[in-house]
Length: 263
Image 1 (cartoon, rainbow, N blue to C red):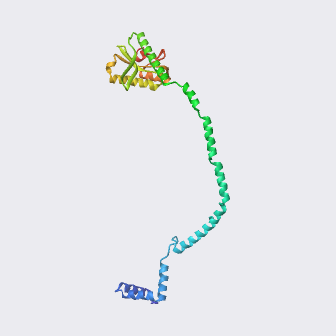
Image 2: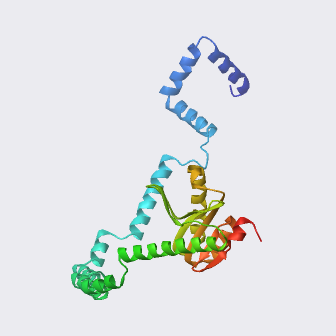
C-alpha cells in the first residue's frame, strides 16, 4: 500500500463496485475504529470547504450577542425613562398644554368677539328695509318690458311697419317678452335691465326656437330683438355677430337695417 498507493486506490474502487461486501466492511471499519473515523473526517472536511461569505450557526450566534450588547449601550432603559418623565415634568407639560390650547374661557371670549362683529336682528331689519322687495323687482321688470314694447313699436312705425308689440306666451315653459308681427317682418325677443353677451345669445336661440315650433306666428322676415337699459360691450359685439336688433333705452346700438342686411 505504501509503495503502490495508486494500485490500492484502484483496487479499493473496484471492490466498492463489486458485490457490496467490501463496502460494508469498510463502512464498519470507519464507524467502529476511532482512528480511521477521525482520519476520514479530516479528509472530508478538507475536501468540502465552507464559502467565506456564508455565516455558520456559530457566526450568527456571536453576531446576535454583539448586537444585544450594542443595543443595551445605545438605548435608554426603563430606569432612564423614569428619570426623564417625573410627576413634576407631567404637571409642567399639562400646564403648557392648557396655555397653548383652547380653554373654555378662551372659547367664550372668541364667541363674544364674533357676536360683537355679527349683525344683530335690528341690523338685519335695517338691511331688509333698504333691499328691494319682490314686488319692486317685478315692477322694474314690467317697466322695462313696457318700455321695450313702446320703443320697438315706435321704431318700426317710424319705418312704416305697423304692429302692436306685446308679450307672447306659448306654454308654461316658453314665453317671449317682445312680439311684434308687422306682416313683412316679425320682431321677437327679450327685455332686461342689463344685457350681456349671453342674454343676446339666448334671445337669438329663442327666436330660432319659435321659428321651429310655431311658424304661423311669424310673417315675413324674422328679426330677433333685445331691449335693455344698459348694454355691455360684449352684448353689442354678440348682437352684431348674430344679427340681433339691439336697442339700449332710446337708441339703437345695432340698427334694424344692419340686421336686415341693408346699408
